[in-house]
Image 1: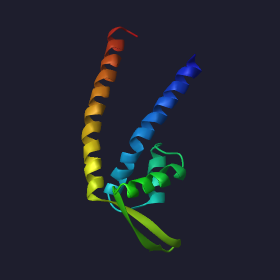
Image 2: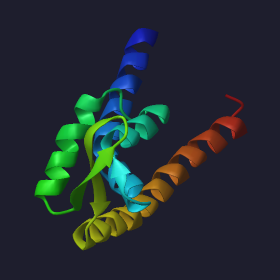
Image 3: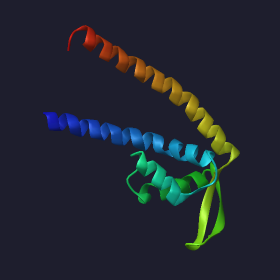
Image 4: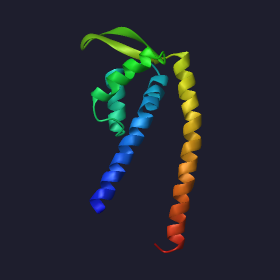
Amino acid sequence: MRDMVAADASRVMTELRRGVVEHCVLALIGEGESYAFDIVKVLAARHLVTSEGTIYPLLARLRRDGLVATNWRESNAGPPRRYYRLTDDGRRALDAFVAEWSAFRTAVDALLNARVAAEVRDGR
C-alpha cells in the first residue's frame, strides 16, 4: 500500500511539472535572452525536467505560438547557438500565468495548512 501511495505522489508531481514547465521556461527567458541548454540546466537543477528532450519541442512550440523569438549567435565552443527572448505576447502570457498561479498557490496552501493545523490539534 505504501508503494502505491508513493507511486501516486510521484505521478501527481509529474503532472504538476508538466503543467507548469512551459511557464517556468517563459520566466527564465523573461530574465534575459537564454540559450536552450542553459534553460535545461536551470530546470534540471530544480528538478523540473529530466532531459533536453522535453525542452526543445517546447521551445519550438513557444516560437511557433509567437511567445518567444530567437536569434543566432556565434559560439566559441562550436556552431552558432539559438538564443530565445520573450515577445510581448510571451510577456503577457507569463504575467497572466503569474496572477493565476498566485491565486492557485494561495488556495492550495490554505487547504494544506488547515490540514496540518488540524493534525497538530488532534495529536496525529
